[in-house]
Image (cartoon, rainbow, N blue to C red; front, top):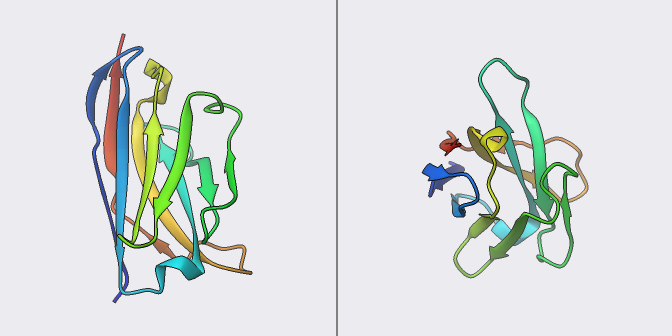
Length: 119
């Protein structure tokens, strides 16, 4: 079955950096666009960004543009979220998700990884 496993979360001071990874299995990875989402306590889930199956196209939410980047390595079935200049407001559980090309809905989700940014 399809599995998405996030890793790389942790505690970091404001201004610091983290790189999240999401390892996928059980799917033809390059056929899926991958998204990153986050959910802070008491808040709704928020879209962070996405990357196309080939990696040639990325889109980031305004709240993280210029600070976060998304990349993928299709040979390793892994997508990354590089986060820099982190702010306390970035504290959340971060999830990766997979969406088959041509569809709007994300079909598969990981279990999430906690990112905590201290001030």
